[in-house]
Amino acid sequence: MIAVVDYGSGNLHSVTKAFEAIGGEVRIASTAADLEEAERIVLPGVGSFAEGMRNLRQSGLVEALAEQVLVRRKPFLGVCLGMQMLADEGSEDGAHAGLGWIRGRVVAMTPPDRGLKIPHMGWNDVAPSAGAREFFAGLPAKTAFYFAHSYHLIDAAPGSVAATTDYGGAVVAAVRQDNIFATQFHPEKSQHIGLLMLRNFAHWKPAPRPAGGVSA
Amino acid sequence: MVKGVRFGDFRDVGAPVTTAKIYDAQGADELIFLDIEASTEGRGTIIDVVSKVADECFMPLTAGGGVRSLADFRRLLLAGADKVSINTAAVETPGLITQAAKQFGAQCVVVSIDARAGAGGRPEVHTHAGRRPAGLDPVEWARKAAALGAGEILITSVDREGTREGYDLELTRRVAEAVDVPVIANGGVGSLQHFVDGFIDGKASAVAAASIFHFTDQSVIKSKTFMKQAGIDVRW
Image (cartoon, rainbow over all chains, first blue to last red; front, side, top):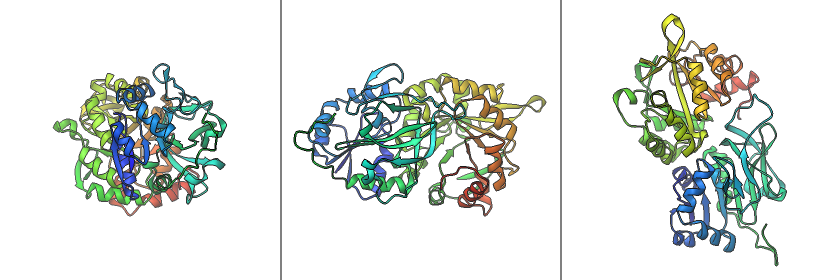
C-alpha cells in the first residue's frame, strides 16, 4: 500500500489519482498508524516552505515519518514542496528549518537572464544523473516534466542530485538518497511520462544499506 | 461547457471531461477552466468539473470563476487544480492575492485580467465577465498584481475573445514587458500563425486558445507542429 501523507498542504487528489491510474493501492495517511501500515510513502506539497513545515509539524507526523523512512527505510517519494522540505532549511517567508533528511538549502531562484520569468512555470527537459536511471526507465532520453516553483534546492550533496533541469543554469530537478527519491517537478501532472515515473517508483526496491553505512 | 464571443453568444461545445481528455491525448501543455459568469451570477466555483477532469487527466489544470476567498482556493487545489485564477475578487480585494500567495505559493496564484476598450479606445480592466469597468489600466494592474504576489498573469482581450482575429499583441507585449512573472496570452486566436505571433510579438510565455480548437479542424497537435516549425520551443 502506498500512503499519501495528508498534512493539510498537499495536492492529495492528483497524487492519489495518479497512483490509482497505474494500478497502485493508495491510501491517504493522516496518522502514525497509517504510515506504519504503508509499504511506500509519498509526501506531496503545494505552497510555501514555512506554511508546509508548520502544517507538517502540527500534523504530528514528523516523528512517525522519520521512523518509517529513515529507520524502517520504506521507499519514499517527495513531490515539489515535499522535496524542498527534506532540506536543512528554507528561506521562503523567513528562515525555517526543514526536515534535514537531505543536505541543502531552499532559496529563491534568481536566474541571471532577466528574460527568464519566475516562477519557473511549465514543462522543462530533465536530465537524470547516472544514479537515478531506475526512475527514468522506459522514458525517452529527453523528457520534459511539469514544473511550478519559485524556490529551489542549492548546496545539495553532489551524490544526492538525481536529475537537473536548465533554467538559467542547472536547477536540481530531483534528489535521491538511500530509500528517498524526490522531485521538484510534478510527475502526477506530467501526463503519461509522469505516470511512468510513478510506476517506476511503485516498483522501486532500494538497495539495502551497506553494512556500517551511515546516511548523510 | 460553452464558448462565447466577447464573453457573450455562448455556444455549447460539449462535455468538459470528454473535451479535456482529447486535449490531454493531443499533448496540450495545460488546461484552463474558467466559469466566467460565476461572479455575475453569484455562483460558486467549478470544483466538480475540476475534480472530474483531475481524475482522468494528469496534466496541469488552472481553474477559476467566482473565487473570492482562501477557502475557494483551497477547495479548487484539493480538487486537483494546480493553479487558481482570480479576476473580479483580485480587483475588489487585492490583498487576497498576497494572502493566497503566502498560503499556497505564488506559483498557484494566477491573476486573470480582462481588458476591453474603454474611454478613448484605450484598454481598460473589466470585471464581472468583462461587463464592469474597473477604472484600471491593464499594464499598471498587472504590475501591481505581480508585486502583490501573483505568480502568473492571464491577459485576455475581451474585444478579441472568440473573434478569431488574433491576440491583442500590443496589449500582451506591454503586460509581458511590465512584469517578471509569466504572462499567458488569451483571446482571439483564429489561425495557427496567431499562436506564433503571441510568442514573438506578444512576448508571452504561453499562449491559450479555445475557439480555434472547438470550432475549426485545427488541433493541439497541428498547433504545436506549426509553432515548432516556426522555431518556437514547444514541448514534443
